[in-house]
Image (cartoon, rainbow, N blue to C red; front, top):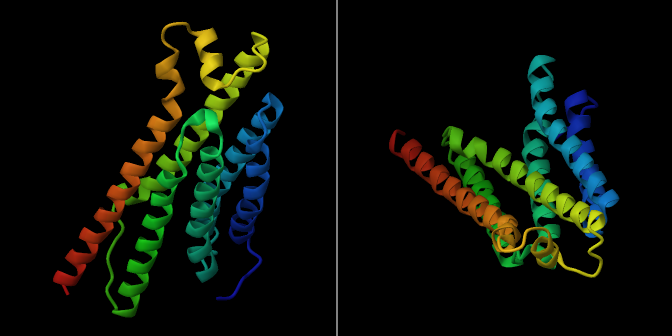
Length: 210
């Protein structure tokens, strides 16, 4: 697989370089760090949009881009959700994130197997929507953390965890707000697993149709 110095490929590599930067800022519980995490995450998501679009527009498609573009997306999603699972106030269990990893390994294996057997099957729109859903949810959770920390600073709620901050900010209804991140993550994981079954159905149809 030959790497060529094209703009789409450079954007893909740039997205990979941004991953540890985003994770670094997510680790810290401060408004500044979370603002930077959100900005760099948004920048990373933009590179995902433009690298494929530019590759088609500039006629610069390559084997490197076709392989590493989706891989860069997967690495970004894996790392961001894993980092979020280590933030105790979000109640996101690490084992839940492992389902994202298992699903991607399974689909990658299915694609490789199909290629070896000369089986061609198309990816459905719902499977293509999976990455967008994951990225939007991750951005929403980062925004949730940012809003929580802004409330903490503005109301001088030092020493409180996320649930304590929302309890002080919204007495009586804080419980629902606290569980927004983990609920969004569960829904994302369920949708992600469903797309694996969708891939399998597409594979079976392709085998049946010869």
